[in-house]
Amino acid sequence: MAKQRRIYRCSSCGRVHSQWMGKCSQCDEWNTLVEDIVQETRAVRAVKPGNNEPIPLGSVASSPFMRKKCGMPELDRVLGGGIVEGSLVLIGGDPGIGKSTIMLQMANSLAASGMRILYVSGEESAIQLKLRSERLGIVSDDILVYPEVMLEEIRRQIAALRPDIVIIDSIQSVFSSQIDAPPGSVSQIREGAGMFMEIAKGMNTVVFVVGHVTKEGWIAGPKMLEHMVDTVLYFEGDASGVYRILRAVKNRFGTSGEIGVFEMKSTGLIEVSDPSSIFINGLGGDVPGSAVMATVEGSRAFVVEVQSLVSRTTYSMPKRISIGSDQSRLSVLLAVLEKRAGVVLSHSDVVVNIAGGMRVAEPAVDLAVVMAIASSALDKPLQRGTVCVGEIGLGGELRPVNHMEFRLREALRTGFTRALIPASNSGSLSSVNGMDLVPIAHVGDALRTFSR
Picture 1: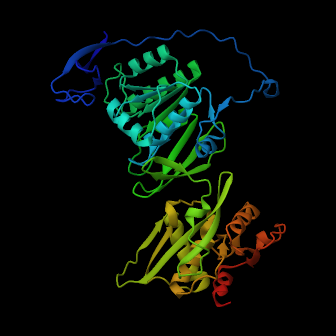
Picture 2 (picture 1 turned 45 degrees about the horizontal axis):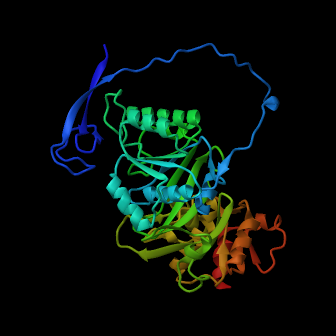
Picture 3 (picture 1 turned 90 degrees about the vertical axis):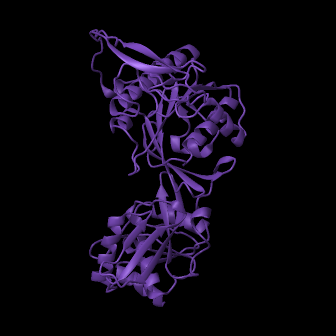
């Protein structure tokens, strides 16, 4: 027996709601929602015997991906060089971080190149999108706005219009009438992801899906959602700040770990082509508690400032706060400082911050964190123009890091002339003209550089 599902359609504007409410969220009219009964009939796919045969890997014909530049170089960089036809892209981030803004700006750039865009809005009305587009200075007739939440209607419109790009904002707001579950539930998200993947692959249409995140920062819904899509992008940064970082954590058509840097202004997201200029303040050496390191994200190297504040506390349990770096790694480094270098901080609060809202997860930041903490504890600034790169082991030894020459050349470009590096890295480096290299074998040797 076929199941029935109740939906509520506005008699004024036609917007479909999953539950009854007094006022329509689309047209703001009161008492216009009319109950409708939908028969849930699911088509059964016939399984036909396949004619495929196993073939050698070397005999598989390869073809290059057809990419389309989206008109935003930072976004193209994160996507691996542009948009791939038939790809399914998931973008997530905190509320107000700029997900809808970057999607609308991308749609405007693609529409200017002659592509047709379908913007499916499940959370905002057409009027709200119009207000945002006016603020961003976006006016294009090639961007079709479709406020709809029912998956069956969305699929019907995509099949009829055959757009080049489809933007779903967001997957937590859409639902299928064939599933007896509220929008945002695991079953609804799974159904929506499967439908959008079928549209992307079957119609050779690029589909961008906006996803909400949980309080822990992960995309809400089943983890299977990230496994199904081709590319997963995360927006990082403080929503109250001005800088945003778009990171590719998965990319089947490019390098994962690539980042793009944007600045949020009243006119939208502005690309930052030189991130080193925003993550550091001068060449250091001005105040204690600051150290600079050179990090590598994807194919890009830039320098970031590591700040630290060490202050005495009267509480029995001192605070350890790490912003932008691994919290547990900070505890390990403090233990190494006390055991291997004799710096006792058991009666002090220690706060470490990566300036600019950047997150650095690689162990190459260890030396900069330790030098910033020691600088604050000793109340001595590092020598001006010094950059610190190195991983610290549990024995206090400095371990080598990769791409050292790439990092040092970026630091040299931004004005740094002295580098504290692991001694095991110094032998494999070719000449870096203009950079004074200081090989460090042990964390204790690094602390002795303050007295030089």
